[in-house]
Image 1 (cartoon, one colour):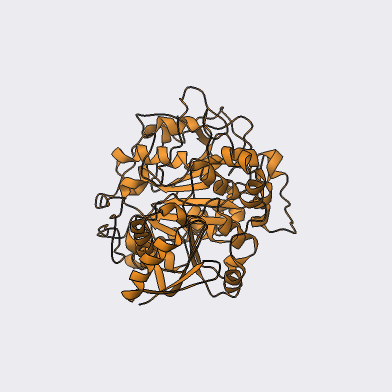
Image 2 (image 1 turned 90 degrees about the vertical axis):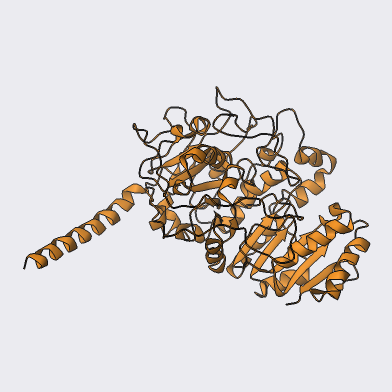
Length: 505
């Protein structure tokens, strides 16, 4: 009898808890708070107390973020598994959010429900967050374990695999994403300051950082720099990136991202503080002047409106006193720059490949030399992501080119062809596309490494398509024929010099 009463009481508590949780969801995700106009009036903190974030005692520290220089196969970047499943706290409620409407639909700038948004999710594990997998979002998960990267990839989610140390040195340009989600429970207190600093660096002006993995979190405890650059959102543990250069914080002398050759001109940390430069006249996609152009009942899709309405001057003069690629090329070849790099109707695929993508032949695509993300833009505006399940893009001349990707709502990471890709051991693509970049490799040894690293992530019978201009083909062909003799690959070469390479398994 006593046991029955206890069971009845426990069941009542469970039912009551469910009712409370679902009752709070509506108030938690208030419509007008996700992306507000910047303000210096609210402090960037959600708690008067300053408790530390408690990392799990059994969480491994992870592995080196840099993969080996060469390989014959494609081993995973080593990272020992956790001894037990991790329970991930989510005060913001993102994990229970299933539709974009619960992220809020209006700001002071107008209706944002029709604005396509890019999302980078840091150390959130192998579980997908459903809200970011509907129309109007481009998510990329950065995880620390091969099994998590594999689970996400097989579920149609884009993922990269890095050791925990690399989260303080992410391969993304300043202002890379509209939304950043960070699970702080994966990191030690000692490393968390650098991780938070980096998460805010890659957050777009008026973008939102959601912090999960801690019951209490005060951003100023871990990164004084980040605390100056954001103000607190109304969701639990959410922070909005300010627009403009904030006072009392030096401006970084260079882009915060490491180049494809491995050098990083600045090293950000809680002790080494600076902020990325935002040029005067910068206009966020969420500010009134731009957001008001988005039609809530559009003839054009959510994705196409983002490609049309972003403010083109945002990618010029991105560094104080220095000209970047966009500055030079927009003057040197103004017509090509506007028609081929910042245009509203990006294109990249040759007709025969587009027909194959349209027919659903290629479902996992890697853009190995993405530039200004024209391929992702083409797939998006033509609706091909209805059949393309996975898409990754990397590689650009410099930060200004990657800023075009960010403004378009695309995500591309900086990576060198000569280094194995940071993806799971079983993550394979059925189309790898390289156009107008391979001539930069110049010598036989580089072409050999390029082929080995691309074939390592190419599905059996998958297609590696390579074309470019210039005198690169003889050395490339020599490296390719060696792989043919090893029965690793076959290839055909078209009249216009394009290589269609298939992997043999």
